[in-house]
Image (tube, rainbow over all chains, first blue to last red; front, side, top):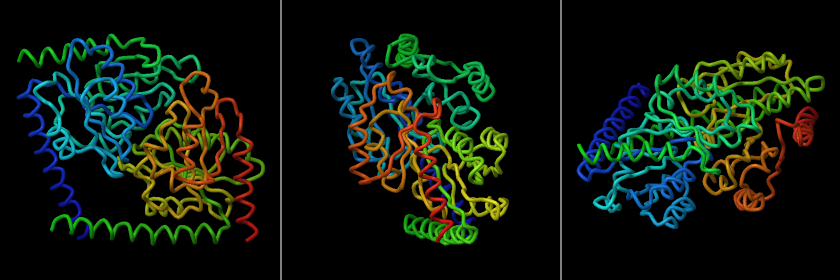
Length: 224
Length: 224
């Protein structure tokens, strides 16, 4: 009985989340903003990718960032501010993922009319964030070379639900064991044809392919 | 009202978990087993450390492993089996952490009378596992150099609750930005005097300090 009660409550929470994700999406669409939900394990390079993206696009595209953190530290938000872009921090208070309610609160604080692209940096976690719609247009996952080539096999859920995959820290390939074919086979099995961007936020290699994809997504959204 | 109901259910679940963690602890103590709960983000080197530990201690200490995975892949359990040690896999079915119920089920399948040391490899996650007692004697966290030096500041909860910290992949220090002083200041702030083991599962550097600590913990448990 307790289990049934629990399941009902969880379903209600997920329904409420999905409804609010729909409201977030409308808000983004009304303002012609393309929004991504950026997910990765801790230290895979979410903030580094955001900073590289801002650097590459700063004169062409107006970018806002929502920074999800489990603790009240503003390390990441401060870096985005320093790069001259509007950033709102969400402190989840120990929670392991962002949800649509938190993102809705953050959207109220963003200058939406002034933005083309919104990047939501989720909490560093390969599991829980996969279950929560935020209202963004694309889920983007960052894999990181030193994490190893078996991650698609071990965390399949998050690989299934993304529309782009960044493979970061390719500059470390000479120093770690990483079988790119084995990795790509795992990805292809879970998400056939997934667009991937091998790159290095350290050296800048591959960044241009990633930002060109983003520019394309933004321009499609502006026309329609 | 729904919130109150939810809180009550969550409290009941945590109470039940803690009671079962106590039962697990008794079971381990009766069999003179020292048990650790090994936590880390995905790809920090949990399985690599377990394999290196088995390699170093195989003739001296009898080691059992419980492998927590979010998916039904047996990649890690197979590696432990291949190293000649008993391993039981827990598939959490997408859940983001192990709990005492899962560990209790796995303990029923282990040859407890034949073991000195039990290593429970938790799901790769820096957030949720910190909240669940399993009944093990020590929580051990692995940090990984390429994850970056800001992790204690961004994931404080898990750093607070551990009794040992392994700092893995020190062989990558020359190739990444990592300020060891800044990292250690963050750790010291959250968990003063925490014992740390900088090491590399790749080169073997530092492994002996880690296994000596384990041997000491096992021998203390055997005497008392």
